[in-house]
Image 1: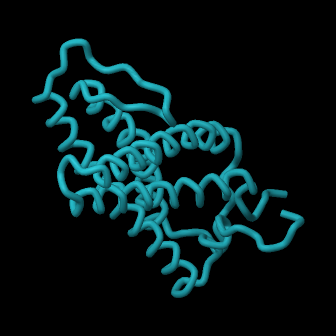
Image 2: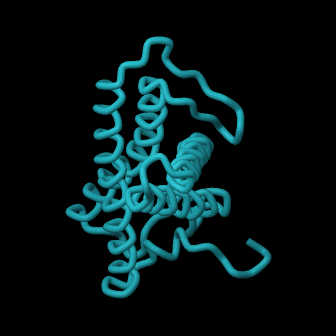
Image 3: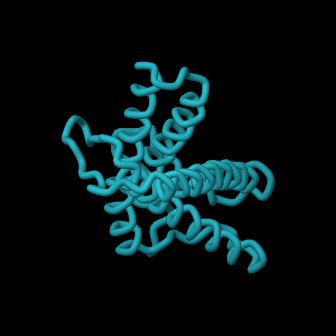
Length: 181
């Protein structure tokens, strides 16, 4: 008998990563409202970087767990015109959740700016390339925005399935409220 829901481990990682991405995006937006060179801007930037690290660190076990477990079937099954775009959107979400932090790390490295992971200094280029760092920053921001809006679309689609088509798409990923998860 196939499971009707994702494993508790995958569900928890899903929601935690979604929260981390939302907060990282919000911090990036907040950064734009802080004065350049201020302690507040530096703190927001540092926090944004830490959330980005957390996303990539949690995406790796999530991908491993996802590859090792079967996808619970949707009841009633999706029409083909819905199933293949859903797979593409999931693939894009996974790819962007990995790519955006990697671009951020590459940007920091090539800019030559000091950065750290929870206080542990990370390497910077011995010969910084500010132009490349700026280009990577633009790509990082664009991909981050695409990730955010794709995640919003993903959430709206899940609510559509829950409230309009009344299938169990959303229920498969919802956390349980009882202790016997």
